[in-house]
Structure formats: structure tokens, C-alpha cells
Image (cartoon, rainbow, N blue to C red; front, side):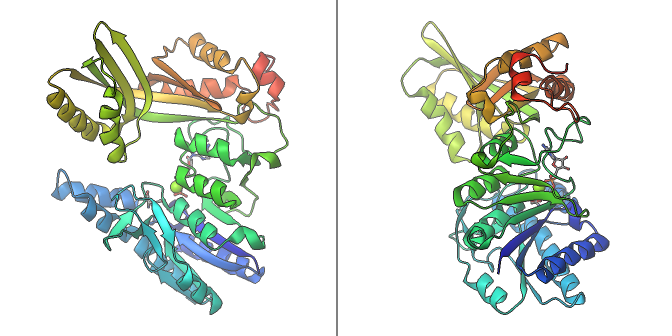
Length: 423
Ligand code: ADP
Ligand code: ASP
Ligand code: MG
């Protein structure tokens, strides 16, 4: 009997009516002959509201207490979802992350799943009931509640699907959300975006990492590592959504599969540092230890000094600045400059490995609109440009359309890389 993990996001369980509709989907999947495990997020904007609540009592709330607080949102949802299932005549057992056997590391607010003991899940499934598991949370080695980073319920779902080895019997992990699949860009920002039928794990991971919030990046990593087929679909519509699959299973030859925006970045520049071996590690190790991801690193040298600049998410600026300040004091030299109000536009596609002309097409689209680029970074399958925040959304739309990704453009790899697209 196939096992399906069904994850319902915040908007999908925002009120009792929607919870009932999601519960009906669970019952339907069971009737179709599947074993079903459910993962739910907190209702609507609950997590944001809990964060605001914390800020009313503390300027710098302890990360441990933040996880204790934020994890409560999912607990409300699992209890209500289990009750909704009961009311439809379906046996269900709600579980916290810890009860579902999800162990993490000690990193409050950004914990990583270390292992999953699926014994209890299997017992509940074996008894013919539906386990309804809190997304976004686990248990640290110290026995504390941890959370997996914003959007982390996707990761809970795919990790459970991996732990239950759903792929071995034809199962999947279904990510039910408020859009009907993965689009070529966030359809809320780019109205011309088109829905993708398939996307590779590699492309989805890169898109998620550069701002496509529809999937949590670590969920995609788990999916790829353990071969979990992921189906992103609308929770209130029956349509087939987007399948995230290995690249070999995708037939279309498209260079750029999608574009994404990180709207709120800051750039930290450390100037006048000594030009000594190991200075980069001295700066970046403590930042990495704090689980902050740093991007777009640029180093310039002048005389006997070095400047190292990098971007971080807006919310991480204060912490990173504090860490860097400590280093500068220890070195007895250097200064920190912080720029805010930056955005990053990225174009992603595995076809970039074998096609040329992609970067220049992106630069041309921004140039024609008079949008200055402050920095460029590339990987094998991604090109990113840092621009002023005021140009972020428009730049995203222009770059997206320049690659012929707009719905109905029917783009091919040839058009994208040689400039013979419809534009
Ligand atoms: P959930 O609460 O269900 O986890 P999220 O808000 O985390 O939902 O993710 C869904 C949202 O992701 C969509 O409403 C959409 O605005 C946004 N999004 C960003 N990039 C994309 C994309 N490329 N395709 C589809 N949705 C995207
Ligand atoms: N409720 C959490 C959040 O808002 C986790 C999730 O939705 O995936 O980030
Ligand atoms: Mg989400």
C-alpha cells in the first residue's frame, strides 16, 4: 500500500472551513488506498503574530524561548486537523515533532533534522490511523523544542516521507499550498509567470535558495538525497501541480526555468583589514557558526589592506554586525560599513551548463530599463544581480519576460540563449 505524506501550509488551514476541506482530501487519499501521514503548519499568519507578541515583551528574546513560543502555532493546527478527521469518521492521532520522533541539532530557530525514529508513526499507521504531525519543529539533544527556520514545515514533510521510504512503494510527498504549483516566478510578483509541469531537484533547490518561498530549500535537499517525489499543488483545487523530480526525467530543453527575488538584503563591507592569510576564515567562521548564510562575497585588495563585502538577509544584519565588530576589535584594525535596501534578482536553469549568452541577456534586460547592477554572482545553473530594492520587483518581471518565460511564450532553449525569443 503506497504511503503519502500530505503537508498543508498556513493559508490552507487558516480557518475551520479550510481545515475541513483539507481533512476531506486526507480522507479521499485514504479511500484511494493509501496510508496517509499529515503534516500541518500554523494557521494563517499565526507564526508572524507570535513573533510580534515576543517583541512586545523583549527587544532580544532568547532563541530557546522563541522556539518554545513559535512551535505552539503548529500544535493548535494538528489538534484541530485530528478533530476534523475524527468528525469525518477517520481515526487520527495528533503529534508534536518530538512525539513523531524528529530529532534535531541544538540550533534554535534554524535547527537541522539529525534523525527520525519512525517507530511511533509506523505504530499509528499500523493501527489504521492517520498521524497528524506538527511541521517546523523537532527535539534538540538537550530535550528542548527547536524550530527549523521559517517555512520549515515543508522540510518536516519531506523528511518524514524519506524516513518512511515512501518512494519504495510508489508514494509521494504532496505539498499543498495556496498556489497551484511552482511557477517560473512568484505569480504574486510576476503576473505573466507560467506554471511548470516539472522541475528538477537541483533547479528547485537553487530557486528556493534565491527566494522562491514556495518550497523550503532543505526540503528539496532531503527530497533529492532520498529520492522522494515531491508534488506541489493547490490545497483547494483538484488539479495536478508541479512535480519535483530528478533531472533525467525532464524532457524539455529549457535554459532558464525560473527567476526569483530576494527583496530585503543588506551588504556588510569590512574595510581596511590586514592582508593576511586566513582573514576570510576568521570573518566567516563565526558567522557560519551562528547559522547565518552569507552570499555574494567580494574581496578587493589595496596596498596592504583588504576589503571583504558580502550580503546577508535584512533580519541577520544586526547579529552579523555584532560578530564582525568583535573581530575588528580583536584585530585592532578595520571598519564596518553597512548598506541596506538591496534586492537580488536571480535566473536559474540547468541548461546554463551547456548554453551561452544567458548572463548577457539578463544584463541587457536590466540595462534597457536603466537599472544599475551593483554586483553579479554566478553558479553553474544560476546568475544573480544585486540591485537597489526600489528596482527589485520591476527587474524581476523584466528578466523573467526577457527569457521568454511569460505564459504562452512557448519558449525553447534556442530562443533563450541566442536572443531569438519572442521579445
Ligand atoms: P505555505 O504556507 O503553503 O507553505 P508559502 O507562502 O510558504 O505557503 O508558499 C507559497 C507562496 O510562495 C505562494 O503564495 C507564492 O506567492 C510564493 N512563491 C514564490 N515563488 C514562487 C514560485 N516560483 N512559484 C509559486 N509560488 C511562489
Ligand atoms: N509556521 C512556520 C512559518 O510560518 C512554518 C511553515 O509555515 O512552514 O514559518
Ligand atoms: Mg511555506
